Length: 406
Image (spheres, rainbow, N blue to C red):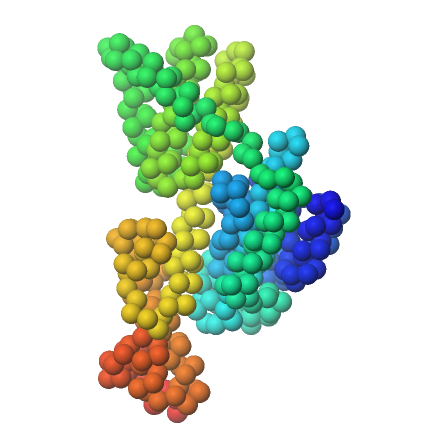
């Protein structure tokens, strides 16, 4: 069975939309029926920002799957979950099979608020209507859907290998870095070299401070200095490779994806080594490094959104338990302090406030079902009826009983 037939069968059997995208996240026209694209996705992609976010999300999920060599489940920027499987073609090009989106729970006010925060220009009614054709699946079924896609695609493709193999930057570049470091010490008296060193330090700071415009400007200054102040082509190549190493280290420290960083580093070294003159070198290197800088600032937000939506999912599943910042931050692999800061930045609300808000929303549902205050306080994680009533009144402006009578 060919790939098209596999994907069509999977889409029809699972009821989940399936598409094939290239390594840049763009959809690849294929002669198979991947199911009807959800209305929500069509509306999001109608705007330039939404289309860009979708492509970036495709690349994020696909690259994670490629790195792990297995299906990868992830949240898109709009709090919907997808899963990806990477497949390498015979010509070594890479494509990603993306399945989804699906919901892990019914649409509620918190989900609508999370989507609206992403600059989605849709009314509440439009959002609810556009989400109506997106299936809701349980976490257990989601895992099996992802595994099944992995088995089907990898069984057909014979596994996925990374196109770049072992990146040159991880081992071979170390020797180059040592040579360049020694040259630095020998050339300490050279004012031009000291300026370059300060520019590199500035570039690292700008990357770690998320200053994309400043990083691009400093990178241009470094490249301009390298290309026009030193006539020796081989020296320029060596120094360009060093700049690549500076970028790679700063990007990894800032949270960029390791596979992407090494892949781009490898490509830069390979392309730079082939250049036969300054003009060709400048065209190649500026293009590669420009994409590298962009990847630093594109991947980090995607990764952060995915982590925060994962944390929100964990809260939804465990809100009735004693739940604190340490437990949730551990689930997403971040320190409590960093997670707290990141949660506030990405969700627009502090972790404790979000947890309380979610518990109050669940309490409203139970109030409407006729549960007693004692039962509700225990069920939604407050454990004390009086405390629950005080928190409810602080959030809603009235007591639980008065809220029910409104």
